[in-house]
Length: 91
Image: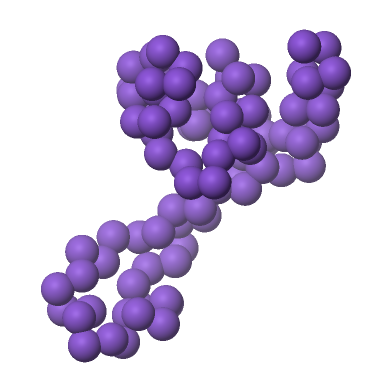
């Protein structure tokens, strides 16, 4: 399932754990565990350092109404890309 999850992350324009859960026919908590495992194994890199103040909109007039939740981004590492290449070649 981890390889399938990594492939779906790679193909997605926008990563939504709930959408991935539907695509993989798995519960959201299992997809979340998959993300954590991919990070732990070095296939995926999480960056949650961007917050509202770091973005241009953080200084906008609507910033006080913004939810100001950190923006998480996901990057597939070189190790992850190599795994995907091997996986796609085998499929």
